[in-house]
Image 1: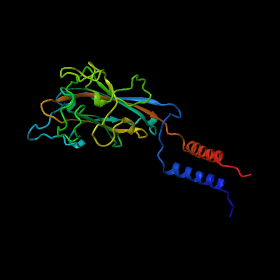
Image 2: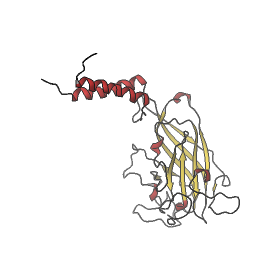
Image 3: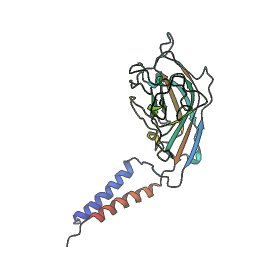
Image 4: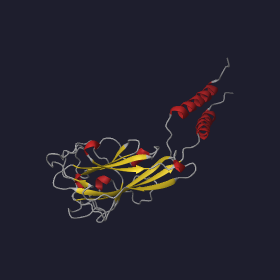
Length: 272
């Protein structure tokens, strides 16, 4: 048996830890090793009848929103496999939604990725109420959405936004923080780019939750209305997906283990 000093024990332990991290850890992609590619997908445009988002309490045969995606209007878009980038993973997602609605504070919008992660883009902005379709917590902002002004949701840290993108919770406010009037249009009377904000909704609240996933498969946009008297229609939505390659396993092992062991070695004290 070899007699290993304390410094050598740390090195061996670090190397073992490296192997465990490589085998069982999750790789977070931050910067592309060989560049990246941006793919854009557009949903099939819907007619007003097909894209109708009704208010609740419509009587027999209607489904009232109760906070679950099963009770929301949904539209599925297929992100078909591109063999060139089959193993590349998501590094960023931006979603643009073209729709109309006569009361923005009634709306909850969610996006589900191909692997099943659900992100709430906006949840009854201005109301502060629970995400359960109960219409409690206040009315929310009264501004409108119209087809001519699509709204884009993004939390891309590289986006050159100065000042930073406003929260989707503030989508019904003007640049001075004042509520828009009921006949004002979001995107016309204020900005049209927002950072997702789940507010009181459960689950994920940023599009970065999709990072590291494969993009291929069915993506689903969910929309729901939590109050009576106002409704709307979805026309179309689009995804801008940035993909990056996963580094080769050998490269990951060398980078992780080499970096950890170098740190341990440099921090070891020499006895004299």
